[in-house]
Length: 439
Image (tube, rainbow, N blue to C red; front, side, top):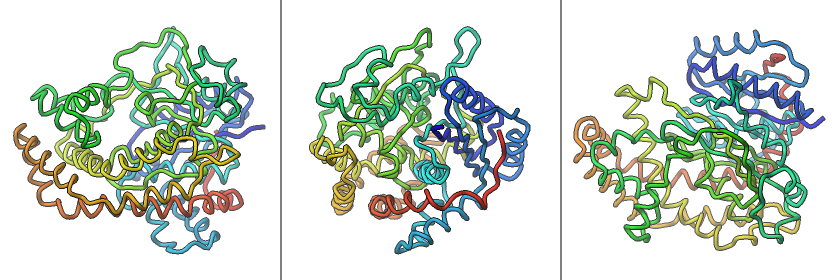
């Protein structure tokens, strides 16, 4: 029986989401005959984590569904064993990159990738704790339906499971490496207030994501298409496309990978939104087939995001995202130009090429990032209020942020270089020392 990992990383109370994702696991087991490992990676505070554990223990036992609830201590123990058994250089740094003290969207998903390998899972299906499923006739609409129809199949064979095909015939023998969709509801980045206060500032700030050489018109169009997912689209019927999936059309709250996640990890940068999006770009640029479907997940903001402290923390992650793009845009450009040359004869990623791209980008002059910080300082002060207070915090942190952005890409290169060894070791390490709940 094929094993899959349905992963839910969380650092907040989310008992209802855990129950809902368990329903998706049951749907997958009952309709596709797979063994689903529901993996809750829990970095939330003690009372919330205890509640999550109780929710999982109270779930009804369902054949084909196994739930794992792992706190950070358990995750660290597993990671230390993997890194130690792999005999890798800089083990303490690697452990810190896998489980940093600060929030990291990329690192939490990398942990899911390694643990999935230890569990013998062929694929990883990721959901977020601040999202929920759409309903059709009162029943939840589960993305895993499309993920299991196509993921891992030869593209030519997957064509019968989708609504339409928009894939050149030369890709027919390649495996479907990613299946994903997007979200509806609130923007994935908390900047709607910025647009209401001053649309011109909004466009200038969001445009900092784009490569510097783009025209003002291109940056404005890019901003219009950013962070909005599928907008207010309501699910009424299924539609799926076999294609080279546009990275702008999918979100990491609604994604599944097979194969590629065991070859290249995500960027382990801390306090940086978007640090978990690298594989979406890699799959597209390497011309690996994917499926884009319309079972969009509903995104919503937790109460913490609306507090002053939550606002400051989130804006810092947003600023660090812009700084990361100096390096990532350069890598994406190199990957896009390389295209199919990123693949070997077995359609696997040529990992040393990616490592070289990352290392070369780390040597870029950071003058563009100085300009990004200048632009954020000016625009946030123009917005006033708590945005101006954040500009003060940003000004105090300039040197540190510039250094961290460069170090993040260097660390990503190191992790990518060692990733295949960590995956191989995970497959033979197992989770026997970790707490496990039947789901």
